[in-house]
Image 1 (tube, rainbow, N blue to C red):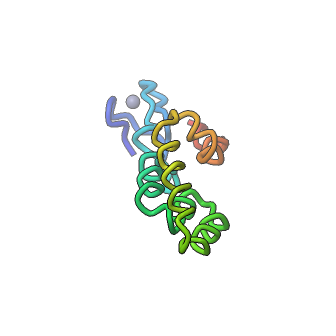
Image 2 (image 1 turned 60 degrees about the vertical axis):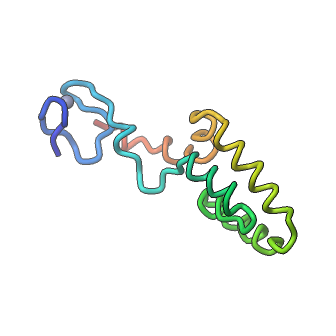
Length: 110
Ligand SMILES: [Zn+2]
């Protein structure tokens, strides 16, 4: 692929152009990147059935939410968690839910 800024050839999926030094990390998020706004909205709107837990890869917790969805408790917890996701910083959210993506050294090899 070509760098959109300097048009030099760079490795496929590179996060940083080796020619001009432009970072593409924000442009090229991996497919399994967890978005805190999406997680927050899912928690607020669909937290009662644990959708935000499934989204964040915590299927076990999501099933517990589903089992107790007939009580109002998961909806209340989901609402609170959704607000926490939306109000915490991107760094804090990434450290908790996207840390497995950051620790992959091959993404920074170029
Ligand atoms: Zn470049």
